[in-house]
Image (cartoon, rainbow, N blue to C red; front, side, top):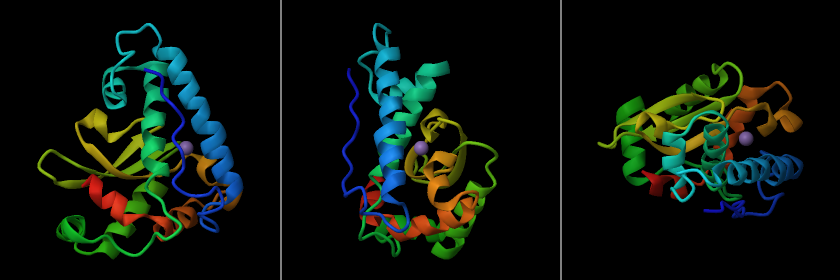
Length: 191
Ligand code: MN
């Protein structure tokens, strides 16, 4: 299987001022493209060549795991935003968040705290288990909750390449701003 660079469901400047056009162009057009191209090179001729991306992430290691994980991570990441995003989740996801963390506000606080507390590069995810139980997971580098048997629902990228041009070292400010562009309709469908 040849993986392809996903198309953005918005213009490159559509998420400004939360994420600048320049950051989107580098992050999607260069970083993600490089992960996709490297994954395609590494997967060729292996027994996982035609496997779905989630399975490759679960069953590989080393460079293949890193690049497959980052393609999966960024495909979920870039499709969870909208220029008309923000607000609050609705329906079943809203109920599950409230019953797990008490309130949406408290969930956001704990999610951002997990992201700012992650040392080095990685991701913070909202994930669900097979029974629909929600949790916040911290994943190092290119990992994804699928390696823990969980389904990823929403992820914040805390690699510096995702925010440094716009926020420099202010990771918490970047993470807090992301709530303004989350497309809860898309994220809700993953739950
Ligand atoms: Mn990234």
